[in-house]
Length: 464
Image (tube, rainbow, N blue to C red):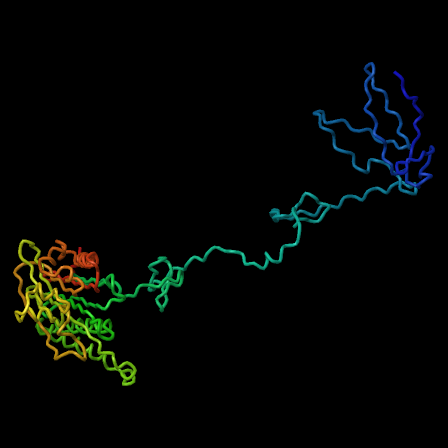
């Protein structure tokens, strides 16, 4: 096999590849500083007959130190520091020794502080530097955009504040809207419940009317001899009149306050009921006292008006009073005995029946049946309060209601069937049941009902 003849190796400039002469410190062609040329790699010697030849002296006259052995586990030993390698600068002078490493800062007397986040401490000869640097400046458009945050947690309403019926968390402001979700709240009179000792009442707007024009007042007191007495007043605003809701509210409050003031003084319950109806009439009449300018601007408006029905129960006496078409029913605890209706309507249908011109079924089937002939208001006919006294010989419950209920349980028997058996022991629950009966039947009108157990239980007794 033929081979190319080998030529003697001539050192060349590492920069321009021109031949160099022995002892040159600079390249004669390009002036390259030959003292900075690293030593050429030395091939690892191969053992021949069990011996390793000594390495040849490197060119340039630089005596490189022999590499240290490994640590015995195949890992190379640490590299030599620069101070172990002799050298010269471009003028041939020995290189100055490297500066000593900076002294370590004194250790604090106390325990070391924890390292701050994002700062490295593994380079004592460099100032503290963050681990990561931003690659580019932040986008000003992103900085201008608001950062979305979690929705605010609604603050708990004050102890005396109203809680929203929608979110159950927000407070209701004076305008009737939730400050948290903005939901409009139902008006206070859309559904009302009250329990006073053994007597209770419930009123509901119904399913067809836009507001509740009914009102009630319930309470319990004691007669001069200490015997218990309970009372309930239920009023129904006349929808064709102006401000019927104000009229029913004023009448119920005035009548209730009158009864609770007269009974403890020893006034006979029937006389107290009569006086309460008169007081309610005056309260409704007062609503018609408007400035003359208001009458001029709305001459078509009539006076506020409402109907009224009430009951007073003592240990052995039951007194009822009414003006209009709201009713009182007697429902005995023993359902085997007959119930009874204790009032007569001030209505067109009742007049037809009383005059024997129509049967009750025919009269109440007429479209004029619920046209009332008696009411409370400034434009009413002469006031004729109706009162009656009864002495039931057995226990039972008195049902006081507007036509919003009795339209769905007109006869006494129907009302008794709709009234729960434990009505005397649980009047509030039973009043809710009767209101639900009317709503299930259609709820075409406002519904209000009050229940009074007979005889009046001792003071301190309430619903179970």
